Length: 96
Image (cartoon, rainbow, N blue to C red; front, side, top):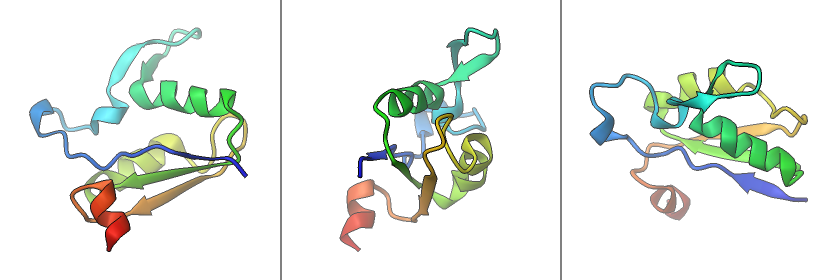
């Protein structure tokens, strides 16, 4: 089983006053003309790699927005598992 990890745990303090997680900020347009976010490119790479499951560690403050944006699976149907953890870093959360 191939598992992809997309860490979304940072707080993006330097992006203030933006009120959206940095991974959801627009980064160009897709082929259909709709804005694409940073995470759209990452999810495309996950689909190209044919991962079986995607794990997204995310801070509680941005979990709802990220979960709403990504949904339950990527475009190829690989399920997305959200791990909501309060630690300051992915390493800190894994250590606890």
